[in-house]
Image (cartoon, rainbow, N blue to C red; front, side, top):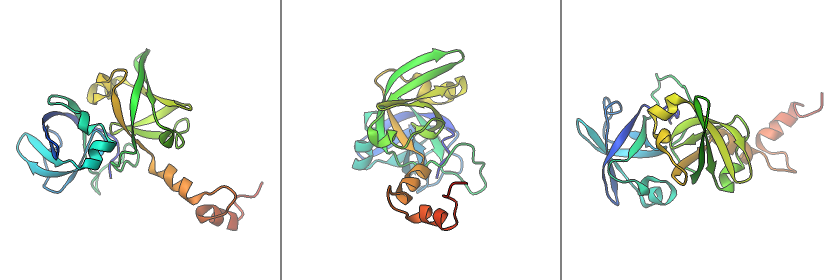
Length: 210
């Protein structure tokens, strides 16, 4: 489990069909073989670690469903270690299970912020509402507008400086993960039926007009 609060950006040192090596600093202390690290929002398993870098295993599924396969040596990636039981929860529930890849539609300055619009598939957009959470390249962000083909978020200067979102340009691919709570609500609720949590709410009269 992650929070979407990026600890640092690392630099891709080596990339093969089966593994990715990232040069890093902050996420190395305390990290051990078998630990999970979020790389651009994808939960990956550490298979090797040195004083200045770590290596994670890449599955074919990861290449198909994320932007990891499009990386090159020198590219910056967002890094976050899995949340510890003692850690502060500062973002939202991020699993590191990328739902889809979107494409940056525009980056428009607005005062001290930049409004980033992202083209996304319907399977993502159906879960979005104004002010909901979404993880973009592993960064926990708040949706400010959503439509039939894209959504937008506001990037403050801190987010642009401390993550790789500030380097994005139109057409760049980004990993997207919607809030897991939205998926659970969809699972529990079926139009025309009273099942799961909807049934429970109805049982205790919470659905009746007051």
